[in-house]
Length: 371
Image 1 (cartoon, rainbow, N blue to C red):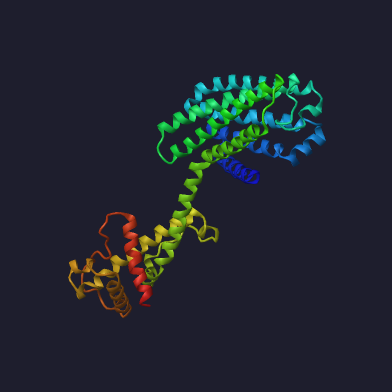
Image 2: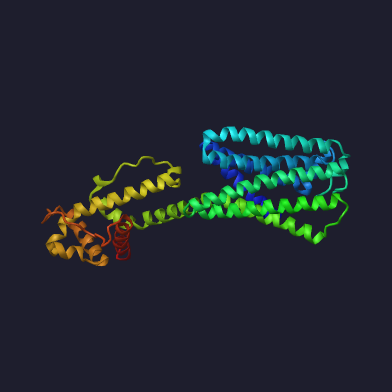
């Protein structure tokens, strides 16, 4: 599970840093990126390999201190995101005040860590000697601030979720539940600290359950933060794939019409290899092909009117229309004049672009099958 969480956090960090690079002066985007960056840096520090490396260089207990300071930064920047999202002008003063609070907490736990032997913080939460007041203060101070910040952020997430529509509401509810669960877990751990500081014992099963709850809630929080962006990317990718496929499926019809009327071929904006794969290039070539097919059908339609009247042409099945288009192309190449006026061809019953494309594809597929 730890590897899965690390991969999810890494992907979320990279995505948010990319969004920040595209909007460097947007305060909410910057806050989310910095929050996830702190979270992403804190997680490897908490893992055995990362903690051992830092403790080897800076002394025992340094990894625990760095991890907790990064976690404080995570929740502080998360609070800033909600503050700036509500009112950026008024948020600046509140954000500065919250920065003072988190700085005081960070300095307090640093002082507590500096006044105890390094070995006292070298272990995990479950193995630390909470009867040492500084150790208990270290964990309780950081935990209570995390509870406060996570609880406030979770409350704001729920408020925005009620005001939002899907899919944003779904991501916000996931975020709110994850934050609320993490706040509850921090509160329970603070109770554990108090019990152990007073000389009591907490069952390992109970402490392990809370630890697992923290991991699960962290996963839910990260998934909620990235949900809307990931879903938008998935939707955009599906549209990209569908338009690439439709562009290829329109080729038989497009090729027949362009061979007859080469002047209808629009000049491409770019002919580079990258343009054939990037989203903007795919969408541009897709719409250009539709326009070229429609222009070609208008030009070739006068060569079909002598075979039937205007109303019947609109009722032709794709296979029959494809057959007549082939015969008309041969007639045009022979130099025969158009016997009538331009009329609509392959007009869909529904009045939308997707239906129009489906009608063109049906004719193009019929041309391919009768080739």
